[in-house]
Image: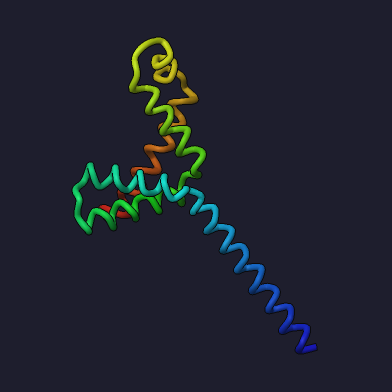
Length: 119
């Protein structure tokens, strides 16, 4: 009977560990090159110091915990397309769905900034 309880407890611990790893994998779905690009751009905007390296890295970790990578890519692409000129760029500026994607990114960035720069 005790053996069954121990085995049951061990299975519960393994299941919990598996859920924790799955949650971390979802938070870490940003590829390394995207992470590096983000941190380089952040440091270029905020200064090339060790302190800013830590803050920019923190910011990306927080962003990744809030916004899945595919949504980050979509919003980044929309922002890039809005930089252009012409009819195609206007479509990216005047479509509600695109505005919502960018707003999600902006909210996630604001939350990350609060947690890493002001917290």
